[in-house]
Length: 482
Image 1 (cartoon, one colour):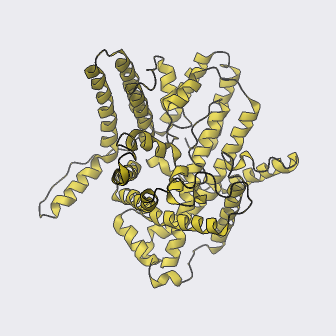
Image 2 (tube, rainbow, N blue to C red):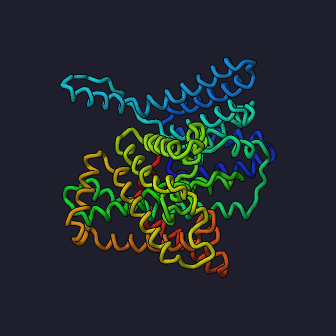
């Protein structure tokens, strides 16, 4: 069930009505409704994998209780490592087994050996990387005694499988979400309207920006041999806006939907394409994953305490692991490695935390220096996205070699020039609104609030009409595959 479908709109309306008008006087009934709705939402993709989600939930739920009841460190460690091993084992089998089998085969064939690997012909369960990380963070936090084990199964199951975040995040923490699930929620009209505005903006990002950019990005990347470097560079830029509109659009819809139910999810994006360096970009892109790796991998490895060597080593580790988290392909690992290289100068010179505030805060325009920094950071990001989007390393290097050839000086070729210009126009409008609203949690949080009511609602209506006009070109959310 996609967020950008009539089916989801009907589903959301029914759950919202039952939640606030039928179950509103009983927290247990409300949470039970959220759990049943979430399981139904997930089963709409493939009901068979619902059992895997339930198993993962039961595993971590009982592990938390067993660890809290353990009287010895040995017993506590046993339950902890059992849960970690099973969770990562399932993730490894479904997501990475074929990758390792095929990579091993390719490696031994270099020595003239013939191997017939056994591969699995299975579908990757949607959202497995996200709900596995929900469970892992909970088990680690209970083990480290940061939180107490949750005894209420329904509350814990809602934390893992709350439908707005279930299949593509944000990756929540039990310390943040569980307390909200456990306390009575009161309907607040202003928060609900705020949630609807964020959903509207998320749909605009997905339907008008991401899905339309996808058409051109797909043509250029899938037929790279037929295009000059200038066209391929434009294709990479289109993909940069596609993936941002797609993933941040999903996150906006998820956060806005959760707010309709009185729940605040972790912020996942904060205008990353206005970043002045790569370090700032990674503080603003997929924030829930970046902070997850910081708290559960980077810091346990020693963080920055051991001097430059420790910082360099740990930074490379988390970026390579982050790349591997995205998919079982060498292209994702190289993408992670590239970002580690890009961020390295600021790590070594210890200025990776220079740009903590949003750019040009309180000002209408950035300075020339800030504009150049934003442009350079964006180009580095686009370069790395080439590996992320390419089907293979060979394809990525083919595209890059053309971009860095004389053909970069040619005029880009579009099969539908009129549509391309229209999409460029919408990207410009989109980035202008993002810039004007960059000091808010999402672009429409403050944008236009001081306008007269008819004009403001006219603007929302125009956004809605634009979304409907482009809604025929439905594309799967990119991060569903991760």
